[in-house]
Length: 344
Image (cartoon, rainbow, N blue to C red; front, side, top):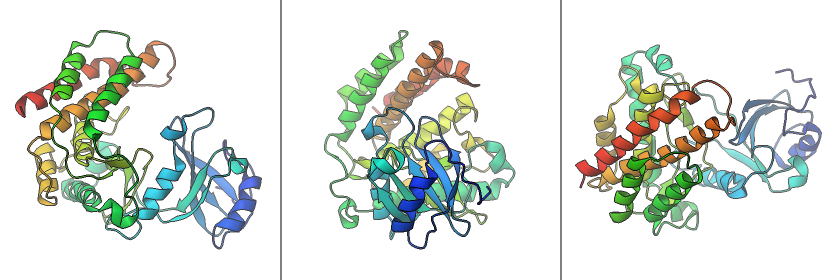
């Protein structure tokens, strides 16, 4: 990136940002250059530099978006709260609510070194021993997050944990209905079983909401350096994080890395039972009804994928891999039903 360039990437007016940066970010100059490193329908992420130091800026996607789906204040707040815990997070520097600066709220955080492993071949190049160590630490960080007492870090009011599981079941049914384009009897059965037998909730904790290996930066010594992408974080039942991570791994086997991370298929990566066992060893949470959580995770991902499938059928998506999503929903739903039946 050329530090002398004043070309503003989409969504980041460098002239407006420079004046704000100088006033709000310690030690920052106002002659900034920037590069968009992650975009699309999720939050936009930029590397910003004044030629001496680098930072990361996060803002919502361009255009009309629901504020609750891209809440910069929530991301900034939860990472700031976790600074001095065992959970590795980037250091946060400033938060801006003034939409006059960039057209939307945004925040500035540390640029952390590390690799977000996504594809199995990336891990295979490291060898099975290193891959195993990375997968073990992935689980350990999740267990550490779930051990944090929300109130002790100022997050006691970060969400409504009571009734969290029942609300999740209803939420994803509504999401699935909004993308209706075909009959999915297995989805109907899975929803009915979930709604009819919601278990007592695990003690409330901080839920990341999208925890997986490509949302974790890992350094050259295979140590986690930062958990990223906290836009779905809330208070609720933390076992939903564990179940979603496991279900992502199943989905990776179905779809491959063109659509989701398939890192779990790399030689040496912990298998499902080893992941669950390692988490259980680092946590005192009751996993006796974990089948319900796996069923809920399958239902959630099926609802998300059906939305993508619906948009693909209507010509609203571009790129490779979308043809495989519709068929992959069926084994995903079947796996959710199997998990419920085995745990009933």
